[in-house]
Length: 241
Image (tube, rainbow, N blue to C red):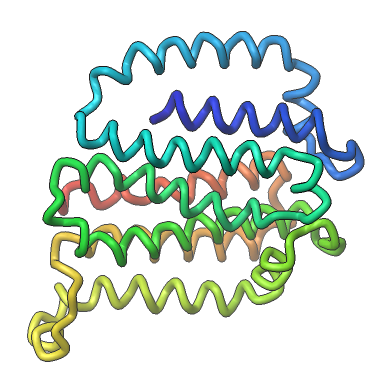
């Protein structure tokens, strides 16, 4: 998964730098473009390693990943065409969906019985990942967002509402295990085993809000790195699984 995600991120930066207007690019795009030969070489090496590791995957997970990979490859090609740049497709919002799906595939492949109970936590995690992208976009485009898709413009102008919705949804996933009597009365579908995922989503969301408040005190490079580190909060709840 690490190799696949790195290949996608590096390729995305290289294609952005190749196809987009230089004035709209960030430093990370210029960095990839300046060192594109090195990145392309490492992408090739990573792709070979990924191909060698793929047969070792759990067969059920491999089949689902193949489906997700096909959808992602199609979307990847679409967003990097000239037509996509003209119509400004909602690239930021779809990242959360794909990333969340990739994270949950190994579990649902091994335990098909958990698919229904993991649906809500996966949706909340996808929303947190999308929130991460929205904050990054706001930090990099504090005033002019005319080049964004209309969904991105709406989302970035209502981040407080988005945060509130995510927190309410995540807290709803924590409440049933904490209050079993209430959960039983409401017939809440979330199982106790999923509450650490919801708790991690709450912590990640609050960390992103905190970073947004102190963004002027952090360099752009460190701010972006910190925003991605904010998604590592599931590590804090591993012992509860």
